[in-house]
Length: 297
Length: 219
Image (cartoon, rainbow over all chains, first blue to last red; front, side):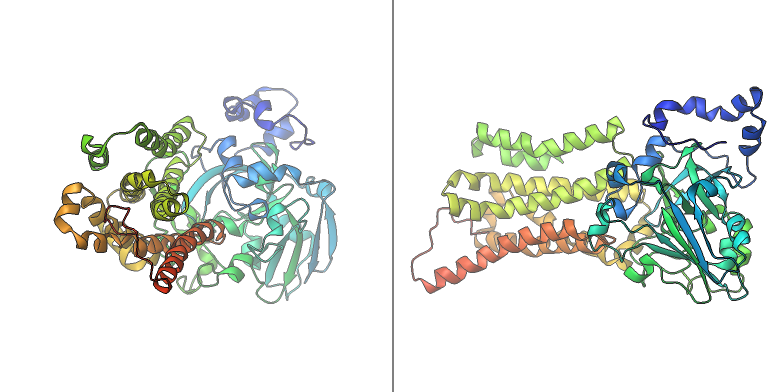
C-alpha cells in the first residue's frame, strides 16, 4: 500500500527529493515490493517533464478557504482535520452511498505526473497519486439522466479561516460534464510525491483535471452529485464574464484581463507558450468537437 | 535610475543626516525583496518582485501626499524637505515596476505590450499613471522649479489624479480579494479629504494662508 497514515514528520524530511526521483529504480530493485512497483509504473498519461519540488507545490498555490495569498494555504491549512472523512455520492445514480476515506484509498492507486496550469498564468508539473474518477462513478452507476457531475468542498469555517470571509460563495463548488468526468485523465488524487496529500493541496482527496485551469480541480471533496442540469460553479458565480463552466486551458482565448498565450513554469525564468488543453489535446479535444470554444470558455 | 534621485541630494539642498537616514529606509524594501527573491523564499520571484514594486510605488505616492498633512498637524517643517525625495522614490519603484512588466513579463514583445495597453483596462490605467509621473520626476529639480514658477505647482498637482489612477489600476487587477486595494484607497481618500476639508475651512475663515512651504504650493 502506497498511502500511509499521516504522521508528525514532514514528508519532505522523510523523502529527500533525489531519493524520491529514483523511486522507480529503488522499488524495482527491492524484493517483495512487486505491488508498489506495479502501482507506480509510469502511467502513459504521465509527462516526463521535470517535476516541481515538494516545497514549490506545497507553498505556492491557491486555496481560498485558507486565504487569498498563495503562501496562505501552506501557513493556515494545518488546522484542518482530515479524519474521519467521507464523500457522499448521490443524485442520478443507481446506487447512491457514502464512501469513507479508507475505502477510497483502497481503489488501485497509481501515479500521474501532470502539468497544472493556473488561470493566473503560472504552471507546475506535479506527481499526484490517485485513481480515475471513472472507477468510482462506475461503482455507483450513473443513470441515463446523469449529464453532469457536481462537486463540493468541505464547509468548516472553524478550521478553514478563509470561509469566514465572503470572498467566494462557500462551500466551493465545481462541476464537469459526465464525459469529462469519465475521461481516463480525470483523477481523484489522494497523494503527492507518493505521500498522503498535504492539507494545503486539498487533503484528503481532490479532483485533478489537467486540461482545465487549476480552479476546476476542486479540493477536499465531501460530495459528488450527479445531475441532469448544468451545476453552478464557484468562480463562475463570482465572475461569469471571466470564468466559464468549461475553463479549458486555451492559449487562443484570453482571460478578459490578461493573455493566456504564455505561462511561467514555476522555477523557470522565461515564459513558455501555453498549449491547447494544456498539452492534453490528444486525449480530450474530441470531447469538444463542433463546440465554439470562444463562447464556451 | 539613481541619477534622477541624486538631485534630491545635491549639496545645495543640505545633505542632512536625517535625509540620509530616510533615503536608506526608502531602499530597505528593495533590499528585502532582492534578498527574498535570491534566497528562494519567494517561489515565484518575478511575480513577487512585480507585485512588491507596484505596492511600493503606491506606498511612496501616499507617503508623498502625507507630507503636507503631517507637517500641518505636527508643525515639523523639516518634513517638507523630504517630499521631493519621497516622490522620486515613488518614481524609482514605478520604473522598476514597469521594467519588470516590460522585460520579465513580456520580454519586450512590443506588439503584445501594445495589445495589452489597448485591450486591458488595468494596464492602460497603470501605464497612464506611470506616464503622468514622468514629467513630475523630470521637473523635480531646483532649476525647473525656478523656470516654471507658478506653473510648477500646477503641474505637480498631477500627483492627485495619477495616484487615484494607480489605486484604480490595483483594484482592476485583483482577482477577487479587494482587501489590499481597499486599504490603499482608504488612505488616499483620507489624504484627499483632509485637503478638501482644509480648503473649506480656510475659505470659511478669512485668515490668510501661511506660506511656510516656501511658495511651492500645498500638495
